[in-house]
Length: 323
Length: 274
Image (tube, rainbow over all chains, first blue to last red; front, side, top):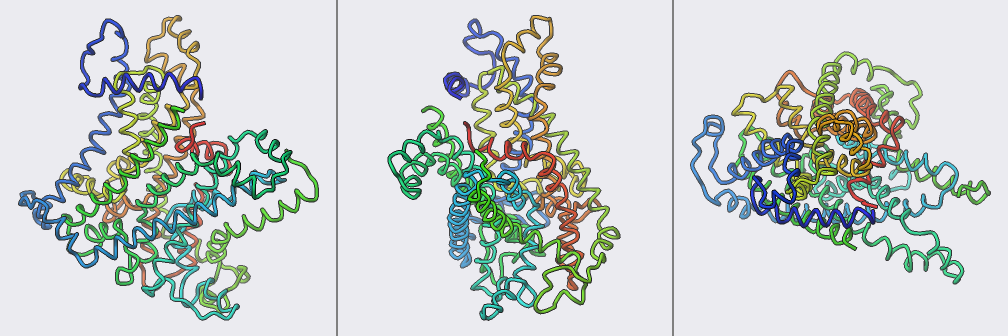
């Protein structure tokens, strides 16, 4: 969008100036008299953001700063506890392992999703008969409700009757307790999550590949470059911006992952596949006696991680638009 | 580019194998949904549903219809509310350039990154106070938060493509801004409305976290909870679980068959600006 890039940066400059002051009569009313009424169209979504994003977030912060019991949760009047809930969470013996699981889950998911997605994107970029149809079909795992994917994988990985163990048995490998042994549960949920994430990586990277001018390849073919040289010399450098965005979006999504782990293992056994998201849910909703304070505290730690990733993403994307 | 040389067909073969591998779990879900209870624990597992049974689907008809109905209603409600909120906003951000608009777009981007568990906990606290836990409108409102920021960004991206001359012509003809939006902008934005509606429906249909926290104890439970209760049962009937999963996947399949173009548009629009 070469033509819109300039205007959008111009608009952004205006916005940067305007966002410093609260909405009201603009100082430059004489110059741009007709812009403020546009907020009539934006009013519904602005009110919505305040009521259904900002307010739940505020409630969540409030939950994390007070000492809630079930009674005070319903009736109000919970005493202010400062950072006690955060202290409780950070000194919990489960905190270290859970953070490690979150990092391992996220990193492993990203690496495998991205690598396999990239390989498939390169393969499908070659345009052969049926390539469009097959590429569309591969989207299926990404579109399925997560509970469907998670329960299907639960059965595939079932210790006694799962197909995976049956297949391993044919090769002569002893059955693995995928979901019920602490050593394998994290691997199992990573496998399922990678499967779900591959299509997204494929589609985004494929659209990045399409943006590379074919002349570049033709020129390098004249120079006698091999396929491998073409990949490292042309495709990979030119795909770097798209790859970076794919990975960052993947990071933001993966930090949020809750459904798959909760449905497959509930974070267990003995917390061996728990991440920050499932721990937070367990504290708030998974036990008979809910602990909303610590649960909300973990949620807020998670949001800080997600927002850091998000801000990096926005920065990189803006820089690319400016170029 | 498509050439039907033997080499190209050889690639098609590899492509078929790769696609088959990726989709194998989906096939397995369908296969298990037709498997009889007594064959469920067979060793080795039956690769094809020979001696297939429809017991699983009978269970769906007997037990899951209310869940499916709830999911359908919640999905429709989410679609309507999302489009109603996001289309005017997209128009304003794309065409009217209000002061502070970019700041709002920025907030919407940030809003997409908030983990669902945090939203769920905040909603739970609010809904408990308001007494709207386990209600349809409550679940619909929560589910729209999955789609609204994305929808505004999609509408903004698509509506920037509407030629300014078209809008100016409407103004010359004496149409007000509201009128222009209603009778010019919305009709030419059909594609983006379809894209947004499809994703909003699919996301609310697939939602588990809001359902389990905000609707888990009530009369209005969506299909994701229907499956979840099945899994939680001690005598797990896997053909019934998988049959429900197959039925719950129908919207995704329909979406892919009828609207593949829109799906790729939606997937890439958020990530890649060409």
